[in-house]
Image (cartoon, rainbow, N blue to C red; front, side, top):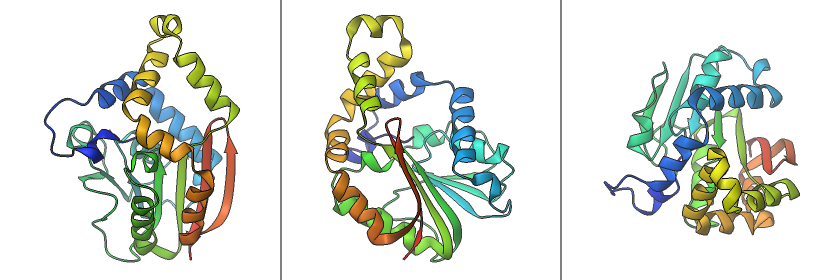
Length: 226
């Protein structure tokens, strides 16, 4: 949900081509509906509505809008890109910040959600360990970390094969946007996809798995702090 290149050069004033492609990939309404369905599959409709929830790497905030539609009111978001954060128009408090150094007190939140941000971190395993250390610090004892990230499955390989086809890209704005995003995050993207055992090892170092699924090009992980 957030931009990868921002981590490499957060001071840049140049419009980021990754962000431009991300904004073309789905309309806000399409992304919100996608997140609502995903959160429901992950059991969010059973969470207390007064839970204090933070969406990390929140981008333009459509995950926060999805949580609002599901009835949650105590919402905050964090993303490194001021341009994306500025596009959020919902009720949550949205902050510009680095998820490797979260601006929240220890044991102050009930749930932290990441939907496609960890694979943008520039250095594995160090930046992943820093981010998850902060997430564990901020979560309450019985809090939940929800992580949804790309994962190398046959479906993902097929999606990239199709998006690499120039003719297909000409006829599909979504495929073209996917290809551009992949091109501009290729280093961190491949770094993430090529080390699944390392990634899961760091995740499980910090969180006890409650539920884990891999399918349709995604890792879905729900865990509690160790």
